[in-house]
Image (spheres, rainbow, N blue to C red):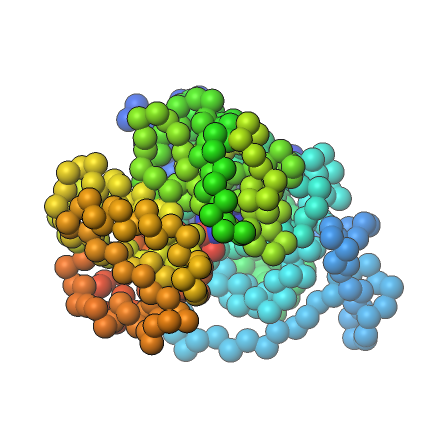
Length: 465
């Protein structure tokens, strides 16, 4: 249950009989569309939850909950530290009553999110130790993902179209972790336990009921999507590495062969797990459009402390077998229009942009495609030769390299200078900071938000696209 940036985490058995999802039908509706619960539907509180005490064990990763006693400094009390947050509510709060209550909780716990996360996982593993095996052995990079995904989803309750798509992808993706429908109540129980302990300024019976309704809806959408996906796809694919091309000391291009047909669309991404770090998954975009031989290509940059990326760049070799999660992402080409494509790729973010160009070429389209390939140095333009060859083959394609150290313009400034782009659909892929500034530049250039697409998983819902 994590983002988009981002996916991970799982959960356990019913913790007291509430958050119980409705029974899942054995088959999806005939057209494959999934019924999603009404936004106001509640499986309600079967009863008031028992008070949540701090777990006997310390939170995972050694982030211990700090002692607290009402009316005094930290002592040996079993209560976790409660940090009061002075929060000034906006003059006008928009949205449904439940959404308003949930956002108040979010505003309060924002400054202490790390504490809430540590307490949440400690509570989950102490109350439901059988779930620990679903998680990686080391939780330093995993820890935030589940809780952040739940909170992000709950915060966007009023954005139904985006939220349902996000949750359905999340539900399908969680199959690879071994998540089952009966695991969701334990997560709900511990989520409410963590929130009620730390959001002391905004918590009330009405707030708790709003969170129960939100989580019931969230979990049911994910459960339904997973149940439907189980009828047509495996939870994961094994894939053998066929080629490993080290383009720079830190960037490798990997081509893999899945053991079963792997359907995806250009512009999407998949989660990868290596044999060296079990249960640790990271997202990588497909670097080519679907191929007739079924091979898949990924561009991977080794990042500091990146377990999966360093294993794929420095350790993986042809013949090694990795695992693939299902495809996800909506940064795909709308082939029902003839609008131009404005594509911004930063670093290894050029991978899905290349796939989009190939997708347009395979359709025989003549729509204009403008690619801005951003990099810090010319050394970072590891795939520029491929992009220039594509430009030579397709007169409708234009490729511009924007190098920070050589140009007087950075990527967002170049977009503004080369415009206008009012007749284009925009696609962005790269670091979150580049996407944020790129989105601002595109909006300044007159492209409406509904024509700007990107799959920066952590930023997807935050930027409001």
